[in-house]
Length: 421
Image 1 (cartoon, rainbow, N blue to C red):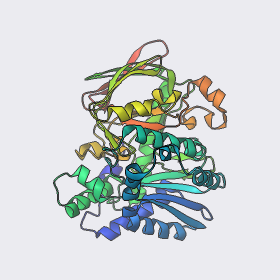
Image 2: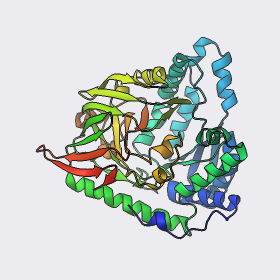
Image 3: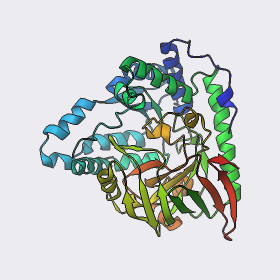
Image 4: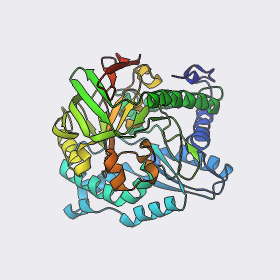
């Protein structure tokens, strides 16, 4: 899609600290596009502390007025599920999420550092997991609405953590697994390019050109076909394809996901029909969900199965009315650098960039022409979905074909065996 992936590299002989510093630079300069005088809110696990410190340094060098980090701790999370009273699981820190939303309204930037244990809650009660997730989703709704509307500049980067590394490289000694995962993160994040910022600019340009071509075609629907999949996804009225970076409502350019290989748009939430099977496991709120297969009628999931984590999948679908409808469809070639790595990251930030995917739940209003100025009723009229959740899962592979369907019902090949035609 772009020449960035083959740019000259500095190689893995560069020290880990130097590569970590490059990732911090990319996160602030390319991912976030932080402006002088902006506040920055970061969320991260305790294991990501070295990267957080470097990002904080780069943020202040770029002119940040204040950097505030909220840390999570796996043991503290597990303590709740093991010892808290039952009524605890319907509670969330609304006061904290209200403060986060207020910070975003005052133009604070947002950065999330991914790296959670994919199976942290796999052995916990699915009922409690579902209730806790629902409570958090409701509490964080005001802040997340500003994110999904791209009102501010935001980005997500990743840090290797021991628990995550053990999932990606099972059986490896922990220090070797963590080192290998860092190598994979650096490669996917283009940190090893001789000039990572220039590499990202070139890659971003390629994704924007692909989105522009799809916008010219104005397809009415997409038709996915593959093993266990025969799915027709109608596209929202006045939909807009996006890819790579975007200009947020505050006028600042950012690339929300580091890494990213996708072009994406908004489906019509009532025009999805057929059956689809996942091609990679989904890590959802600490639970691994594998072998997902769902059937849509009139845009809504009416039947759902999973070989692992089925109870959590069904709790997720029951979050609200919009949780069983689509809010995003994204296209990624099977030859993307992340797919070529051959790794199953069990982390949506990476796995969604190895395969085409769909997302249940909230739609991005920026993928509707003029959507950032529309109210909820106007967006719904265009077919944009509304929900407390937004959960991506992978449906593309080297065995999946994709056609674009015109308003007249004619089909045009877009992908064959997972590759652009």
